[in-house]
Length: 460
Figure (spheres, helix red, strand yellow):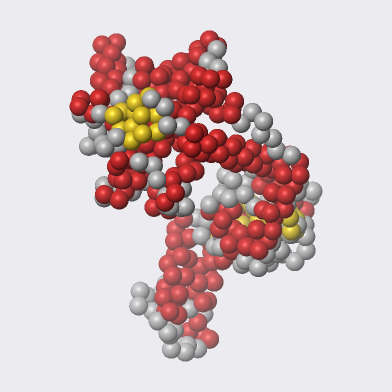
């Protein structure tokens, strides 16, 4: 994390730091001693910066990272936290000076009322969280006195963490001022259509390089991690399906036999058996120690499918009579996600998909002709009837208005951050900042700051 580039981070996370709340025992914020209140770390154009305010912000940073499991108690981390807090404090002074000189820090009465209303809602959410976390939520039929007592207890707990409606309102008013002054500083920043197009092409090329020969990575990043994709690799088709729940006992028998057969094959297989030994006669049970054959597994599979065969026949009869597959999904299907856009376009499935079990993928690719349906396919989820609804176009995605607006906002935020950082750097160069002996441990050394401190980036 580059200390020289903390402006955008601090502006966006200040509210989070001041309002984030951890209810784990022993995680209350460290309260600076009374003697810290008058200790001056530096003067900024003659205005003192007190140790108490910087230490409180450093503690906020430490608490924030602790939520992600980071232990920052070592000396090096503490030094970095102090510098981060001092840097944020200097930024705040910078914004105060700009706001005062430009008049941009003044909130209208309407803006103040909105902030106070939002602060009230935030406080009520915190009280609700405390009531729930500490088991203080009154029963529905609780008396007024019980409700009042629970509320008072929650408010006391919130206050012990430094949260009152007044402190929350003060923090949110500060944040509103920061946003207003920042908007004033970046008022001339614009994003052109050329900027959007260039960024879109850059993202397309990045995704092409990553995904064109690796559909598994495409699925992992777009589905598991929820990243947007600007390029679709070849080989994906849209698959809808009717999922039918099956007889649980028959399914259990099939799964146990399949698992035992797989275990035998992993162990090196069984001795050769004759065709007669491989064939189970109807009604004959295998002993616990007898080897399982593929014929056993296939027979168990057929019995599972047979448990819903009447429904399958009914579905196929209606389909052949002209009922749409989409209507049949809604009538018979047990997959709750087979709705909306998925009902129309289907799940994206490739031959090398990693999102689905192999039986699902194999069933999806058992259909040769676009628009056709499959026979019954058994998976761990039940019995499926698949439909091959479309070939998903490979290549760059369409630059839709939604994507255009998203890129515009991202570019605007980046450009605004650059302008804010440039203005802040200029202010640092022109300001008279004098550190005291106590403040030397907090001095912001921008020149030697690491370009990227991954250890303090919870988004990694």
